[in-house]
Length: 565
Image (cartoon, rainbow, N blue to C red):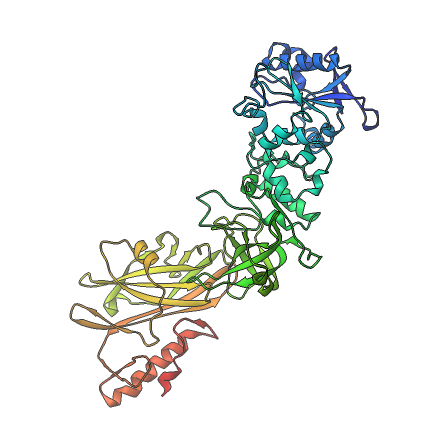
């Protein structure tokens, strides 16, 4: 450890076993802070931050301390190894200090900190991420004004500090160890704090959670996800999952089980662990996501979405009932789930929780970006058969057009948040009259579907595709009129496999309609009026669907066995 001599302002290094008593400084960084290199070369004497260091050393020397520690000049920040070691050791250094001097440069001395609108309550020092551990770790903290006049000690102001920070007095006075507090409550202490670099909001909490991990500046919010993953390795506290998304842009999205930042724990300060059976099942990160066993209760299906209530082993401090969060199944009857952000942890009755069935599931740990939202990341729709100009119709437009491969007659599309996908094709005859065929895959119901929409020149193809209801066409097609012409349109989508890319084969038939209905069938299947041609037409339809189905495909429209009658 490198310490600053309080009289000479020179740096000295000490081994872990030979560190003398020292005073440590807590402050907020400003302009022209003095670095280690500038202090050693003498160039720092002319910077604004030098007077802060000098005044701190004078105060420490008056209290009979020979050595001091200041984060600006006692760490060589040009060395990534030393910086990483220092940040991982910071909580310990503040805890081992004889005294911590907290310098509040925005607080004057001539006002009482107890005033309702005092500068002390509004000080920037209470809003920074790094000062959280600098407040909690030391046994003795003394606050100083901008003129370096004493304001009071942490013990003297504990009630006021608790009202400002939400940290309990027993934690401030070290009567209760930090590790005895729930993860959610500790996270809530940092919910209103900020750091200059996004990674530091995670790194400044390492000591609070007794975690050591390498620093990777440049990883952004991934640092906070790594912190939570490290916490889970040594804790089975479910309160780490008891957070709420306040960002309105995320509310309609899906997420993993881990929060994106501490501010999502702002409403979790009173959440504590709750053991219903005295023991908790282990959980861990895998290459499929977070593997965890949770009691699940299936909710009523909301259209294409199947949601579940997942019961957590935690509760509000003054409420004996457990908390639950909402999960969404990524595929029907599968083990893959994501978290819905529409609501935070909700208290549920105990009798409801008892109805839930324990299930081992996999949940993506962090927020689901467009790259990792669904199990199948790409969907490919192959036009296996479609109308050609010789049939009187031609393909004039498709959606999404950017991912169209004309050589293979294939269009790629990204599934939405829930794993669903759809494509659209616009066909026109020689007179410019058109129809739109929309096909898609519904993940929650595990079926393919195909539908037809009239051409609407006031709407783009994208609008028609996104607004169409996913009702499948009847097996033998439908009657469609364009002007005075009656057409038979058959649309069939079959799934050819699921892997990294989901493959679907689409067959579209558009031809003149010259057939009369047979009322006895449950679905209206039209035959030619000629008896001699009826058998031929029936066999054509059956052969067409059998040949296009392939080996055991998943079919949207149901069976064609009734055509054999």
